[in-house]
Amino acid sequence: MEKYKNLIIKVLALIYRYLNISNELYEQKKLRKKYNIDPTFIFNGEKILMYGDGDIIIGENTYIGRHSSIQVTKGYQVRIGKNCKIGSCFKIWTQTSNVDNDFNIFPIEEKIGNIIIGNAVWIGANVVISPGVTVGDNSIIGANSVVTKDVPPYAIVGGVPAKIIRFKKIGSFENYK
Image 1 (tube, rainbow, N blue to C red):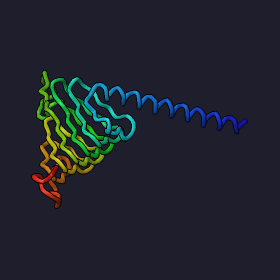
Image 2 (image 1 turned 60 degrees about the vertical axis):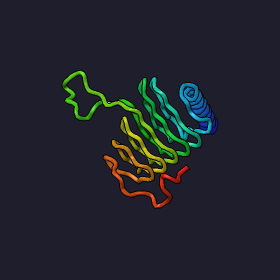
Image 3 (image 1 turned 180 degrees about the horizontal axis):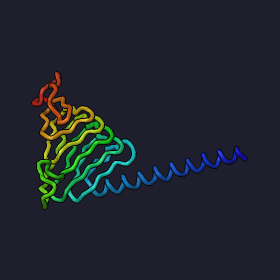
Image 4 (image 1 turned 30 degrees about the vertical axis):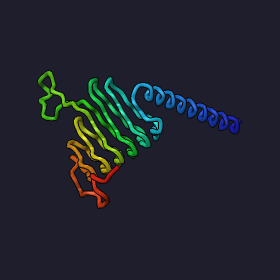
């Protein structure tokens, strides 16, 4: 009897996994229809959330890791370039509360703006990017960073808030293609 019980548990686990994968694929298909996502883009894991009435544009050969979310407000956009590598638990919003607010006084002032991520950007796990930020081509954002200001091309940044650590020793922005 114990043998059958273990077999039933394994079969039920496989069915549950199959249904979960099917649901993820269905959600990804809906996101590809709603937003401008290149066919080569990879949802690199489960529970990647994209929502809002603005525009999300994602270039070719880019991936985003699991448990990440992108919020885009109507009239604004999130643009992620080609050849980007974005780790898990990545979070960006085009609209959030202004940190200098007194949250006892209403209405609460909002910070709002487009988020532009250039080509060939590498973003580590658990990174948050604030509204209105542009991340330059071929830059790197270290894991667990909070990006509140623009990142220049070829920069390596990290920290809370993210600061420039150094610039890459390869090429220059002018000859980047």
